[in-house]
Image (cartoon, rainbow, N blue to C red; front, top):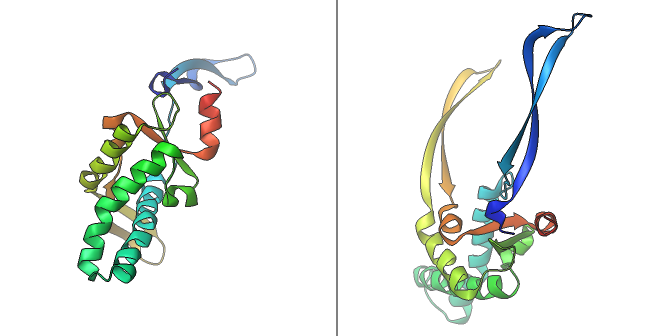
Length: 178
């Protein structure tokens, strides 16, 4: 079965306007089939850090072994991390950074993606770093109400276009049991 077709049954309770003989409110239960949520909390930040962990060793190799400048080392490490990441995701489902955060890349059937799909998703990662700006307000006793601006980098477009998912290793067992 495809991950995009998986559903989870959720039950919610809603209060009615009726009360029982002892004065307690009567609740009505509703059941819904919701799409399976393959992402996990804080996935955006972990994916960004995993990408940085992937690029650092290659950057250092170009800098110290191949004696390139900082700029060229960084520039050469980008396509290299795309190709090396595609190979390791095809064989093992992970990269160095993903292994550190215990994440796995899978396709819609729960298998590791093939090389062309993995290469496509890693290449799309370059255009994936588009920022989304949001404003949030906090209240506390010492400073009163404060408004801050937050910039988040979205990293979901490549997975949506390639129908791949990044899940935690423990989620992989849950997905395969469906």
